[in-house]
Image (cartoon, rainbow, N blue to C red; front, side, top):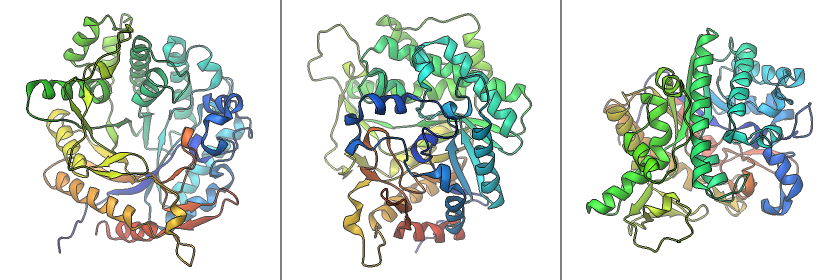
Length: 460
């Protein structure tokens, strides 16, 4: 039987985010972010009316949770800092928040777990959203101030930072759908938000190096390989446009320092280009990331546009292609997502061949399952063999990509313990540890035991 042994020093770990695990949303001097505000005003939008107030209570249980990470041989962990906790008014440091994050980072290091700290994970402070969020250049500047504050507070302890997690998601979910605030459908505003987010990322990369930090700074992108239905030129073009919107809009400027010309021409054709100021192009060109984090869950399959386009004057990405259902696809029925493990290999090759083989790691990969109690045995353990198979098959393809020269240095799952997930709350569970949200008790699942052995052996 073939062995899959990974490079020495390979990172084995998990990812999370502040709003999804910390809880204590009204404690410790934290101000409201957009999720706190939304839950206050429309709790019915959240699955079973479970909001961000408590989540997985990491704020109070972080020492025990980090010990649990050590117990399953995690050697790295990525989480985010809550902007609205660290700088409640956007200016002054909340000392209780600084103490909390110092405690988290210190405990990780004490347990031999390398922290990767992300600066923004969908959780815009509410007072900045009232000013327009990422539509506002003022917020871009405020984000740089927050980042610099974080670097000065924690930079000596943290060797890897990331500017954003999945920056396309607030664009897509908040400005092309109704799943994040401000819940508008407006392509023109969506393009502005994406552009300002990219400027904010480049500006923070510039700040990181200017304040003479001694680590690396990257960005985490959710890459969805776009596969055409066929080799028909129209299908291929549809897949290329999907790739431009959902992958290359952040991948190219982050790594190569420039936007794809095809994307600029397409946006210009439909009068969707954002306002560009003097110095923007230089900022993006000269401040690319040191490494990439890649979240991979599913591919995107498309075909040429065959359905009618609504004649309402609002251009959307879906105007240029239709989704395609591959007859051979396998599905995770709980999320409605295709499971296609080879996509990770294709990403590895794409980064190697087209993005100067920049160092990268799998920053998220995971399988959400609803009603996992169905799989609980008599001892109380979730027998999640489906999740073990999911991880194994993805790791096999990742291993092949590394063998062929891709510069991947780690694999993080989503996630260490069940956590709160935006509007879906605790509907779908992902963790190595099951979290009983009634009493906050943690119980290791079968996949946690499997991961423990894999991380110990550096493979399987």
